[in-house]
Length: 311
Image (cartoon, rainbow, N blue to C red):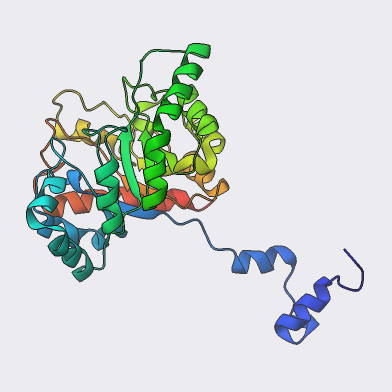
C-alpha cells in the first residue's frame, strides 16, 4: 500500500473518537463491531404432523423462524393444503403472520420432477426446494464419483429452470440414496455445474462424530443451503418410547453441536437452519399438542444458542 494512502491505527481511532486517548486496540475494536454467528431459522411444517396451516404458521415466529418449510404427505400435508386453499390465500396467511415461504420439501417428486414446483416457488417468493438424489446406491471410489457426475449432468436442464425461477435445489444426504455419504456430498459440491444446485446437510444420516461432521461442513462450505439441526439418537425407523424418539433433537441425544456450529461460523453460513426430527409413524406431530411441539423446538433452540458463542 502507498504510504500516502495508508491509514494508521492512530488516524483511524482518532477519526472514530476524536481523541487518540479513547482509542480501542484492534482486537477490542473488532470485537466491538463483529456480529456473532446467528442461525437463520426455518420451521418445518411436518413437525406438527397434519395440523392445519392456519395453526402452524403463527408458530414460526414463536420459535425464532422467519420462514416455513412446507412438506407433502406422508410426513405432513401442508403442501396439499396449499393447493386446497390456493396461492393467494396462502400468501395472505404468511403475510398476516410476517412469515415467508422459505422452502418446499419434495422427495415425492424427486430431483427430476420439480419444474412446475419451481414455478410455484417463484410465484410465492420461495428460493429453496429440498429433494433427494437419484442414482445407484452403495457405491464408493471411482464408481461413486462417476455416478455423482452423471447425476449432475442429468440435473442440467432442471437447473436451467432453477436459474430462471431463482430457486436452488438442495439435495439431502438421505439414507439409501446416491447422495448419502461424506464422499458423495464432497463429489456433489465439487462437480455441481451451477450454484442453483446445493446441499441439504443432515447430520442424522452421517456418522455421529462431531469432528468428522465439522470437517465436512468446512469442505462443503458454500454448497450448503439447508442445515438440519438433527441427530440420530436412537433413530426414527421403529416405534420407541417418546423420550427415546426425542433423542433426535439437539440437546437431547449425545451429539455435541458446538463443533458443527463453529464450522458453520467459520464458513460464514447464511442458509436455513431447521430444527428437526422424524416421528414414528410419519404424519403425526412430534408431540401431542401444537404448544408442546413449539416448546420442544424452543428447547433445542436454547441448547443451540448456548453452543453458539465460542467456548
